[in-house]
Image 1 (cartoon, rainbow, N blue to C red):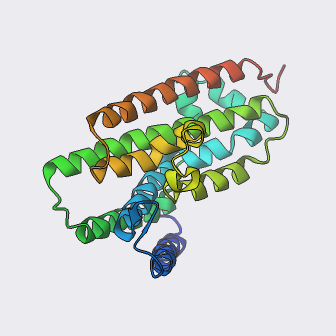
Image 2 (image 1 turned 120 degrees about the vertical axis):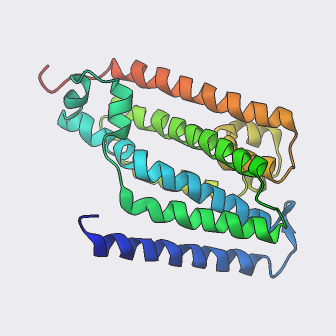
Length: 243
């Protein structure tokens, strides 16, 4: 909050961006009632859920993961590795971006609007389900980006990391099964992205049974374990600035 004008301006821009997105979705649905089985309020719910997850990710993790290549090439990673703290925790959470909190709040507003349109009452059970699904969707997103960021240990200049995030974020703004057309091969290849937003949205919309809920939880945990293993495996390739 040191630069409050910038903070509030960025928050306003986030609101404007959501309005533009909602307008574009409304334009698409002027020509059809549903897209691959998704109605307009359901798509609003998915986008809102993604913005909630993206907002939390941006506030706590995004800046750190995107700075991986720079920290490695400059030798700044030595600072993290010599501290008596878990390296992965420190590397991925050191810096925060409070100005991104607008993404979180606009996402919450979009979810609330979608639930009203779908005639859902905000019960305790629904609220708990939302919190759990957001938590595990965030865990899956963090894991995917940690795996991609860890490639910076292998490739000399991982300058494509921002472009990769741009592709991932744009893909997550639409139901993945719309892109794959429910192809088994497509859904398998994009499964790490499916468990971030699409599957949680389907669970909230009661389009999936309890088994899918369990798959969502265990898959997110498995992704996190895999990402951690890959991070430390790639870390072995790191040569410090003093070596």
